[in-house]
Length: 176
Length: 172
Image (cartoon, rainbow over all chains, first blue to last red; front, side, top):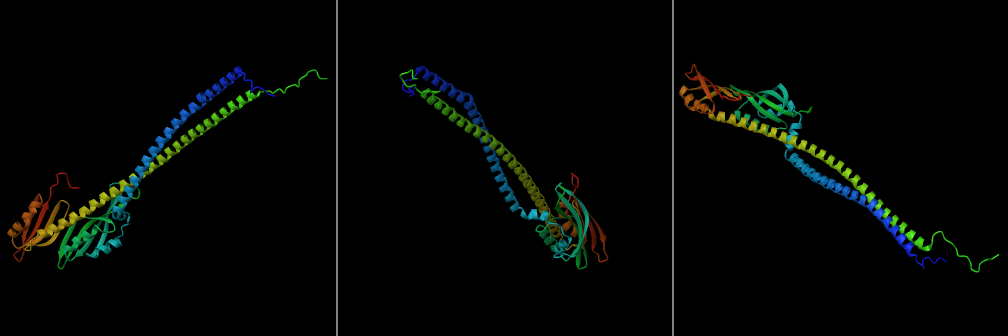
């Protein structure tokens, strides 16, 4: 029978204890501690990255809400810019206020980089200047962004007033 | 032939005491290694997740830039639309003011309205009527206001009134 457990050899015990302590210390100090240090560093890097991402995420949410809000509030202006200008529709609209409406395109140029400005000359006749005011009032609710502009010429001919004026139609510059 | 009185004891490579210690030391080494592997795994996992999070953040920042661009464009569209609507309202008010300015005694035949000038052709019963009822308000609006009169067969006066606003920055 093995009686090593009954008669403990103190020298052996101390030797094993020493081996145990050396191996354990080696594992802890040389292998585990540096890895734990790296782990702590990478954990703090991750936490910083996470916090930074969350802040950016919050900013994105705010901006997204702002964009939706702005789009909703300015839907009419946005749609008006996107809406393709139709001479037929404009003549139809102007026909509510004037008679014998005709349109001639004068110029097409860039306006503030992102927009295109079409200049057209409108010739028409009207019964009373009040129709002209009503036309200008309605222009701000028209399907396109249109500005009535100078020069404006009005001349009375017997029962009616012939008029000629400029309109500027604004579209999005698709090339920008 | 048997030369000993005792039965020989079995000899082991390692005694029981040594085996216990070896098992104990190996177990501790294994446990520490398992713990170390766990730390290494978590470490690489954090590094990987941090890189992923950073890339996601860069993507979100790009989205913010795109949204900012869209917001800027909407604001510019809004500004242009408001400016145009305001110009239309100003033009309407200017036209209304002009026609309100003309007294009943004077008849207008023709008007040419430019950005910085107004030319009015009309008929007035007397020069004084024109001077008191139309010239005075015109002079308060425009920097220069001149009128030329022609006597008609009926004894009234045809007039051409030229009114100008002198813009020091130049008309644009």
